[in-house]
Amino acid sequence: MTVLVVTGTDTDVGKTIATAAIAAALTAAGRRVMVYKPTQTGVSGDEPGDVAEVERLTGVLGEDGVRLVAPMAPRPAGALESATLPRLDEHVERVTRLERSCDVVLVEGAGGLLVELTECGETIADLARAVQASVVVVVRSALGTLNHTALTLEALQARGIQPLGVVVGSWPSDPSTVEVSNRETLKAGEVPMLGAIPAGAGQLSRAAFVARAPGWLTQLPR
Ligand SMILES: Nc1ncnc2c1ncn2[C@@H]1O[C@H](COP(=O)(O)OP(=O)(O)OP(=O)(O)O)[C@@H](O)[C@H]1O
Ligand SMILES: C[C@H](N)[C@H](N)CCCCCC(=O)O
Ligand SMILES: [Mg+2]
Image 1 (cartoon, rainbow, N blue to C red):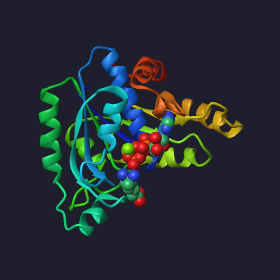
Image 2 (cartoon, rainbow, N blue to C red; image 1 turned 180 degrees about the vertical axis):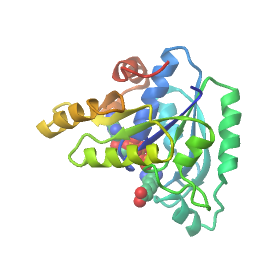
Image 3 (cartoon, helix red, strand yellow; image 1 turned 90 degrees about the vertical axis):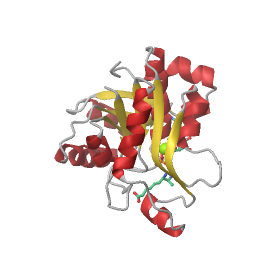
């Protein structure tokens, strides 16, 4: 496995924190990791985006494909500032270049699986297929996640992608009965449950984050 795409059931599900946890766990296992964010929206100037957040938490470096100001999906955000989004083959080229200088490239999409990343409407699923990536799906713990998770897994499978596993992006310290049941239900599903990131993990110091992250991801392939 050299490219791992981190997608999710929605925006704000904890993909970035999960990406950081995966980066830390792989680094702890001796792998050299880099991160790529094909389309980073909601940033102006050199404002930190998700790649900077992963670096802050783990020290793992990476790069953005394109940075856009509006905090919205890449195509409308690009249209607002008359920017041309990178083509799919340009993303493939960048991932391939990063792959040459490390062991694993983590690629974090924008929002959920079917958000369009290019002018032609290709998605992170198309990029995953193009670079033969493994795909991790980050999900919420709360009510509604069973449907969102099933839709995302079905959409992956319909595109010929067998997901590597599911990660709960933010697991509360005091989970409700519904959340405990959701986690059990997801665990019993056909796609492996790779782990859960404790709520508040994003506020940890880098030292604490990298020390704890390997313990959150019990089944991550090394
Ligand atoms: N385990 C966690 N611990 C602390 N904060 C978290 C955790 N998971 C998510 N958050 C917070 O929730 C918000 C959304 O998380 P995150 O930025 O990782 O979402 P995302 O899925 O990457 O969204 P996007 O589509 O914008 O990339 C952030 O403010 C983040 O700090
Ligand atoms: C700005 C935000 N945080 C994300 N980076 C972009 C999320 C796009 C979601 C689009 C959608 O599904 O409607
Ligand atoms: Mg993110």
